[in-house]
Picture 1: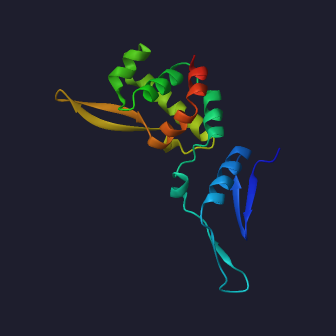
Picture 2: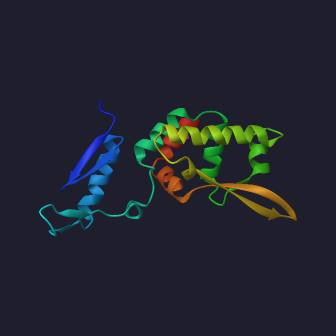
Picture 3: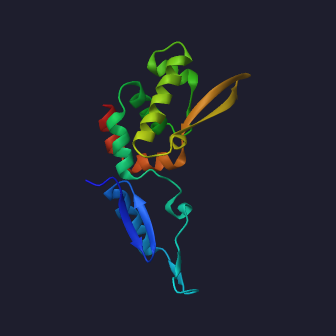
Amino acid sequence: MPDTYRILLGNVIIECHSVDDAVQIASKLRSAKVETHPQSSSSFHTVPSPSEFNGSRWSDSRVSELLKHVEGPQGKILLTLYENAEGRTQAQLLQLLGWSDGRGLGGCLSGLTKNATKAGADSNDVYVRSTVNIGGEKQYEYRLTDSFRQALERNSDKLRKAVS
């Protein structure tokens, strides 16, 4: 099985990491306007920008690949953040996991982003950590990125199965 799959659009080659990615891009290209400009003996093509593909590397195959590696605390965190779109504070996540300090949470989240990288996604496109002020106290709040949440919505059955 090859490591990359190629879509040839005129004289532009688009490389993908899986058949699912290639099919997804090809179907989007079919519906997008692709212009050819005959300015020289070789023409160039304007291909839709990544924002027209929702700017995300989270294809269904990448979500499936990530979920193969997620277990235990990582799965609990993913499911909790998926079920709570507004996010969860560090204290809430620690309580969920039965932990008393944030070092374990940091290691767990680090592992989750490493698993996302293994799946071919951007490690910065899993969750967002922000500082919030609750009752005069600064806390970290975690929530899934919009693109990852959308990908999980398409694959919620796989998520629930992986963490059960």
